[in-house]
Length: 262
Image 1 (cartoon, rainbow, N blue to C red):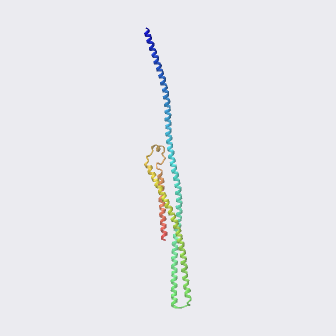
Image 2: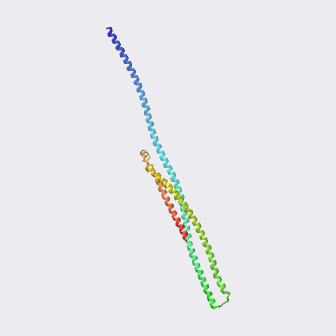
Image 3: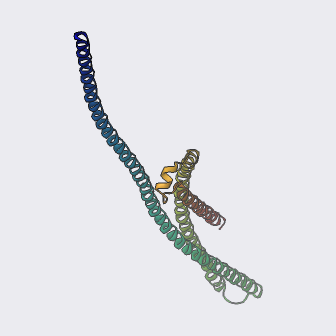
């Protein structure tokens, strides 16, 4: 009996030891569970922060795109102001062109007047010579009258030729002034064409780079109003301005040719 009692006591003691071990394991598992819950909270907080960072990155991309489009808008505004100034200069050039056309019409009228005057003077001279020949043939009248009669019509053509020379010299001076102004304008137009051609080349290179870069789908969804290629309108504007200045250059060359032919 005593042996049985001793065996039962040892079994009870072993059960107590197992019970204590189980209780300690339960405490450890509870602690691990609490640690896991805390780590899950930290991980959820990190995931929320990551989502916030993604939203902030998208907002930053939209801001940078809007800033770039605003910079392009300011550049277009400055180009538009320059274009308006060039249009004003072109209107002034057209006003001078009208003045030059009026000058050409007056020059034609003056040439016709000079031709008629020279014809009239030539007719008077021939008539006076015929009259002198008649007087010499008849041998009538005092000899002093013939040189007086011939002197008066001969003085007139000399004075007229002097006036004509002065008028032609003034016309040549005016032509030189107009030609120098047109040459200056032509040089300015050529400089503008070269500058605009360089800008157009840079824009075409930028457009090729933009076409080669793959589009970003997230940016397109977030910014539907953004222009995928904002340099296209500016390039078209530059091409129109280049064409305008080339027209102005050809018109100026035509006027120079007209001045040289006159």
